[in-house]
Image (cartoon, rainbow, N blue to C red; front, side):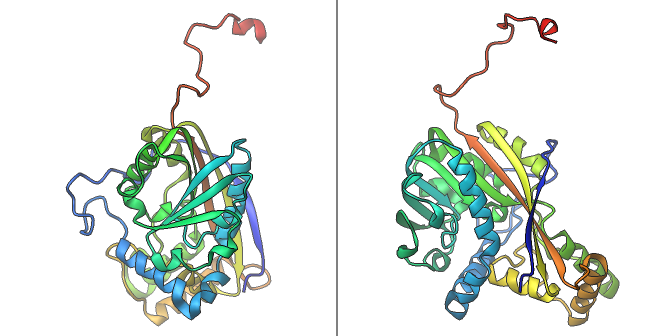
Length: 331
């Protein structure tokens, strides 16, 4: 189904957030549609459950390719941190794409936490190199399950883009970490699936006279430095990568997204599209983006972030005015 998978490194840009992030006010019913809720978490849980059980999970395993590619890149970043952890918490772990790549030189144990119990338990312990503990819990309510100041490291591979209150989730991650604990995450960026987004919008506007969201809103790389800093992290690193996957047509892409558990879960979404609208979208996709061999590309933009919980043991900048060398002499 996939003819080519390639990666393209992007540049970091920092600026004001594009998405109106805000924390959910205390006392707001998390199961109701509030002013800061974008995604239907119940629908997302059912989509993930369905992907894990369809054809006994075989289709789900077939479409692990994007997450496995990102997990491999995250392992490279984790190896750059010259530290062995007793335990690592894998937040939004799914079946353990990243946890399966952890080895004893990195950690003794991994704790996998995910909101989908069926996806969490899709694969047996025998596929993991280190000790595994599984926790079925909501990633949006991390501190209800994980005590504060308890984790040496928290990792998250492609799950945070479905969090309604991303700033609040980052604060919870920081609070769950021990001082000098590290958070390493990867999430889809705003340019993900722009080809599919534009094709569906143009087709719907042409055939039905309006548009509705069919690809969920995602954060921008320029937002993440601000959000991590606001959450209280220090020693920040943010970089951007792109993975391009070629498909025979738009239809195979949409099938794979469904089997990945990545179908649309925006509140107020349309639950179906007319067949002629989808046919028009496929034609537009081919006209705008098709490769010379007739396949169509799909772009997955990946934002990688690293942040540390503040600690007195971390390197600190010198006080302003304490320098002893005149910069003009150096230049």
